[in-house]
Length: 67
Image 1 (cartoon, rainbow, N blue to C red):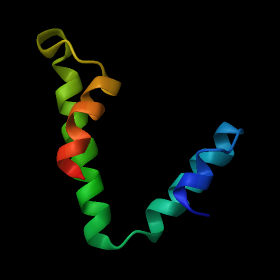
Image 2: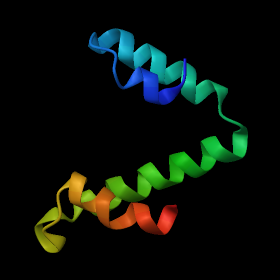
Image 3: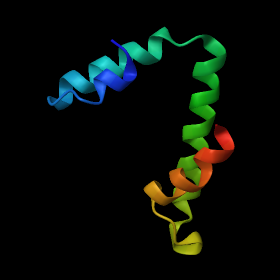
């Protein structure tokens, strides 16, 4: 299943399993890049009290540079 089809899945457990399958299908370099991006966003979120950006805002601000 393609990742954008997974987003429409209603059942939470089914959605998690489908995303896991999508991640397993990624080439190693893409998987490593995605992992580092998520870790970076998590580190930024840890400093919420300083940067005043929630997770959604952080992703909106950072995604244009990723694309």
